[in-house]
Length: 232
Image (tube, rainbow, N blue to C red):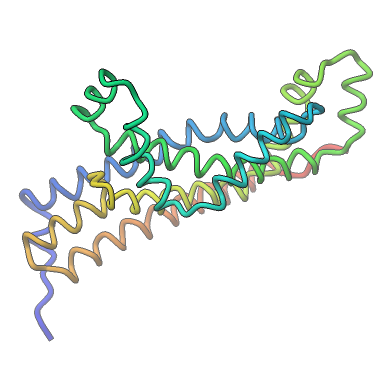
């Protein structure tokens, strides 16, 4: 059995590459989560809107996003979407971080579609009597959703939202196919330069596992502190 040595990966340029990849993976997760949550909320509200056209538009977005693999979304935003832009912004985009921008666009829209359905289920779980009482007090549909229904629905949907956050963290690894220098991209770079495949990918696996468990633990702690049962 060959001698395993993690030392070279924990010092020098290899360590710096892996740390840079981890930082970008965390940044992608945080930015996409911050963008996906409000977008998912709007889509979930649109799915329950009294306006038929708005409901149809939200349904088309959710089903369209969920019916196409994430890999296809990434390739579309990297290769196809920039070609639709005028020359000036397209040139600026290609001169900058187009890989990161494409990954953020794809991951945000993809994650928001799944979160929207989880939020819609949470909205439906809030007793109808609360909606009717708020409307009887003179609240508009949007005010009722924003002030009465949505805060409770968000608590109800904490478990599935934690699951989607977990999926988002893991899905950042797929961005390596378009050259986004996240953790998996840097792990492949280290493996190619060091010829230590087992150590490199074992370390990357440990990082993904550790942070996934941390996200799950944070969700468990939140659920214990804040009950998710809606008021009667």
